[in-house]
Each structure stands twice: as structure tokens, then as C-alpha cells.
Length: 191
Figure (cartoon, rainbow, N blue to C red):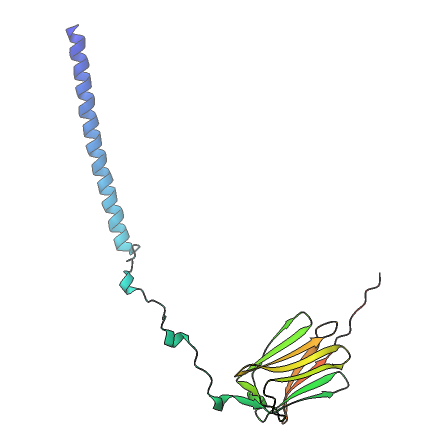
């Protein structure tokens, strides 16, 4: 009986010793592998330095730089007249100015409306009206033409088509900037 107990004790002690030896050896292998991987990464420059907050360039949030300064009045192109003339294809709207080539246009459409914004320009009409020109139903297919100052430095030209968006072409001339407008006839579907 004693031999069996002695054998059990020896077996437990051997197991503990073996487990301790294996754990120590495994830890040495893991440490050696970790050191090898770390040295390979450093050598291959795959580790990147993380920048500190003080090293990051922040966007400029100064109010002085964010606010646009107004356009000097010397750069504002004066439109001294608006004239609509009927042509064979439609109508021409002429923004009368000596600086027609300097006028830059940003246009878009919304439904049947053609809208053109002209920055750095101001209406200063001969009749003293500084804010608006309006022509209602100038020709068949075009309901309205409106030319207004939307602010102190921008003119807006709006052409409203009756059934569809009119075709618009732009030209420069000695007289000014010309909008050649051609109404588009509505199409009726046959069923």
C-alpha cells in the first residue's frame, strides 16, 4: 500500500516538474519569437511613428480669413441698360455694358426656369431703377424675363419658359452681353 502511495506522490511530483519545465521553455520560445518579430519590424520600418497632437497641422479658423471681403466698387461692372429684341428664332436679351467681356456667368436650370448669376456686376439702368428689369410674355413660349440685383455685387437673369426650359446661347458684342433665347415648343403625346 505504501508503495502505491509513494508511486502516486512521485508521479504527481514528476508531473509538476515536467509542467514547470515545459512552461519555462514555452515562455522562452515566446519571448524569443516576440524579440525576433520586433527586430524584424524595426528593421523593415513597418512601425510608423504616431504623431503627437502638437505635430498635427490644424485648419485655419481665424474669422478674418474665413470672412470674404467685399468686392471693391472699382471692380464692379455696371450694366446701364437691358434691352429685349425679337429675332427669327426667339428673343435676344442684351445686358448693355462697355465691359461685356468681363462678365462671368454661373447658370443653372430649375424646372422651366433658366437662371444665370453674374458676379461683380450691378444694374444701374438709365431710368434710375437700380434693381429690376421685367418683361412679361415677350414672345410665345417664354412667360417672363427678369433681370435683378440680388445683392450689391451680383445680377440674376431669370427666363421662365411657358411649357419647357428655353434654349439659351450667350454672346459678347460691342453693346454688351447677349442672351439668345429660343422657346421650346411643348410636345403633345398621341395615345
